[in-house]
Image 1 (cartoon, one colour):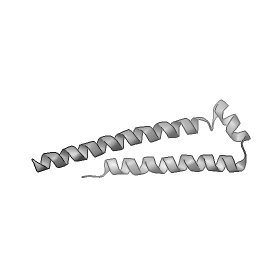
Image 2: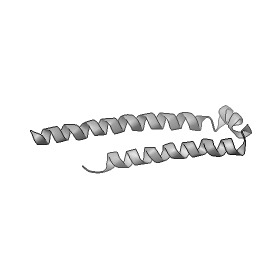
Image 3: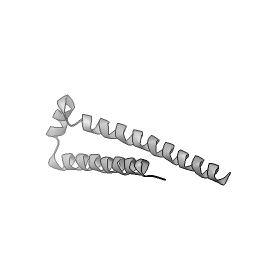
Image 4: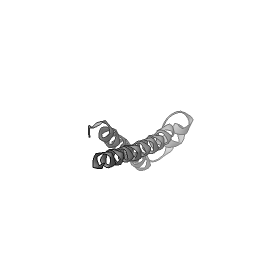
Length: 76
């Protein structure tokens, strides 16, 4: 019985991580969409500071995505 409870707990954690991964990838996709094509025109007209901060935010989200993916791929 205890083993079943632990397995359910891990599954819920995996579901939570998958939800977070989906959310973060959607956010990163939306942010990066604004850096190329028509959206990229506004981005390229922004100041260096705004561009740096924007890309810093993208890098932070990418790091979170990487950590979530690693956690989901690790055994146990």
